[in-house]
Image 1 (cartoon, chains in turn yellow, cyan):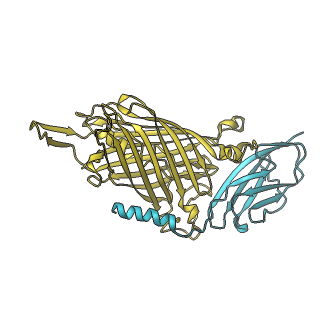
Image 2 (cartoon, rainbow over the protein chains, first blue to last red):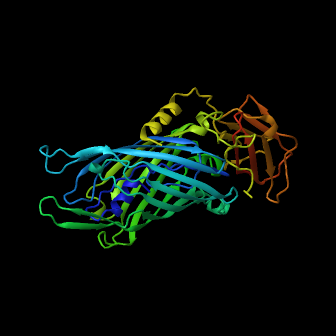
Image 3 (cartoon, chains in turn yellow, purple):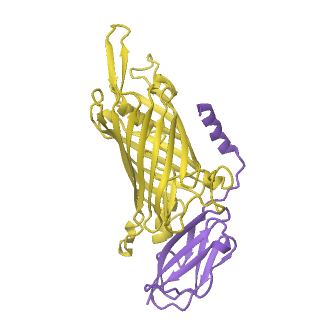
Length: 332
Length: 118
């Protein structure tokens, strides 16, 4: 879940919708490689750096404004199964109405995410993690919508590959799904402000928001290494076409926000190499409140555990063999 | 942590000297993954993307009844190539299970099938 998307859902006013900082961790479970998805976080726990993530869209404000976001996230494993990540984004909002209006730019709030992998099963290509994301209120610029209150989002993540389907369904085995369900809780129920011109007092209520999303992936690397080697050009053997859905639904304290679900559907593709991956997706708003045009997002994602296996890329506290990924059999 | 610290950490991650070794993943195999071969192969050969630790890298090949059909221990050659000799294989479908440890101690595993035709 991007902080911006969550922020949009938390706002009582017009909704800005841009996917940022959704650089989840890549993960290997048995035969399956789960890439880091762009719009939602995924179940992986790893050492990695997603930088830059660049997104451009027209948000759901009325009138709609074009918004450019450049973000990064750094994730560090403390143990084999527990990681902490830090991220933020710089936003440029182009004011509607032409060059006479100046727009705004600045950093969004800093985000910290704690994630713990609770289960991993190689045979069934299944992994599940739990996490707590904290968006630190007041650490960003209010001009670009960074809130003054902190938001806590406990989240459940999962990933499931279909490699355990029978061999008669071999062509379906490269499919995988990932998903997340979180509940965003603002530290403040409302904000009261006075209009400097009229003196009117306005109260904006900050809703609690269900943050949910999923991805459906088809892994050509999996097809080649575990199902059938078609002899495709090497470039294609690194591709994972996917569709992501990143959604948020206000469910409590919704006096200002209403309960309309907002979000985007993101078709795209990820190219996976040995040390990094590159992803690009379209961002299709699910309704007017989510945006007015199809946006785009692209990301470079570095696998620090592979680039720096003996230093920054391994857990601070690890076994003698620094697998970082307990892939031999099931986890206890 | 301040934003400045985050940025510095990111830069440090990019600039630190790299001992670039990654997870060893299967690049290709002989017989080809998912293929049907006319004559029974005498060995299975796997090519990986990284150098392997021989002591912790293995191949097992089973027939449809789950009986092992390899005739020896898997050997590493050329750093990235892992091969295992096979018994004489009658027509049928065989499953190759591999587990390897790359030299930077990353573990990976996988499996695939091939068929010996009649």
